[in-house]
Length: 485
Image (cartoon, rainbow, N blue to C red; front, side, top):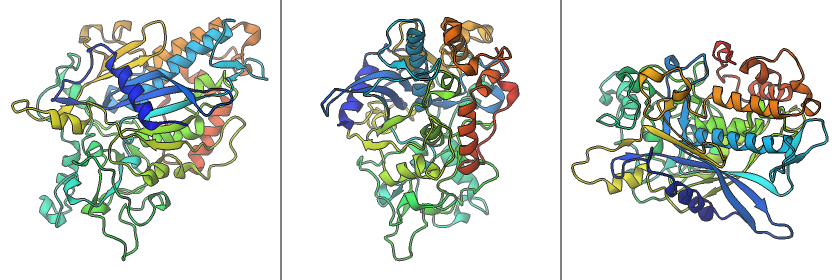
């Protein structure tokens, strides 16, 4: 049995043990926390052992113009993404031990040459202190006092004919004041990296979970508004908002007052200041990991089966089980014709009664007079269970505290950026005996990051089916940003 409060406390305790660097300033800054846990079931018992193997904090992502063709910038620093990328570092370490002939407590050899699989009884769990941004955060609520902004009586009252400008600004405007924890880069670069994740992370004053609308949220079709319910249903005054924007080419948010503000079930990109971002919402990424696995394309070369989060635990925050299921599972539930080793995975969804000490709600409660408005912390922390450099603190896509002078050098790179993870993967390949290499890595034509990702044929086949059947509007990566080596 998985105890949600035990999971949350393990994650919070791991966070408390970390050094001060990169943590929010109490009473002034807030952040989000996520973690990947290894779960080992004891033989002949219902009890489990749980270990935090990766932890991340963060709320930011960079704009399109700040992305690098060298792969040396961390594009997305939302906590769930940071935790997952740290977990990939942990998996590479364990595979390195396995292929080197040392004992891995995580992997055992599979039937096919060069392939590995999890040991019996081992699984993974994802914890996040708040519902993921995007679709999972569009939660109906019935308490007017908990609404993210004052009720809107008419669209014209917002100051423009369609009422959209001011509604949009409520979501995107950052808090006053600069952020002392960002690297000393140009002002315009800092503003590009900011995200408007304020409304999506708003919490009810009493801390109670939201009450879903009468129509089960999991049954709403993509493009439906959260207000799609029978006329005799109990009225829902509003929904918790998300700052993530609908991807171009699909249904847009109606932006009508109250519960009809958002469309549900649609892909969304994380917002930025000025230049748009290309980062999909955490809800969308979790849904993708639920089909393709969280190991990514590169590690699929070594794994017989995709790795899934068997359980997802959310901390104390506005929450709806139906909305979480819709966002993470329902949208992909009919995907079929997947290659061997891939499936549509439906995790156990749980919520803890424990709240992160640096949540937006707790930070607001602890704010003292004279501290001004609270703001999201500019830094992102990654910790993972590896011997070499387990801690990585970043801001605006680079190592925390770097100056412009060292940008483009290894000193500025996060250990989680594509280039660093690719180099770690190449180190794994080099450590593998040539006779034990997976068949997919035996080509002499593999040079770039792009080459190695495309060569993971089963993963790419699964991705094509997911895109075709569930996410046809998922933006395609720019190949020119993936040709580094």
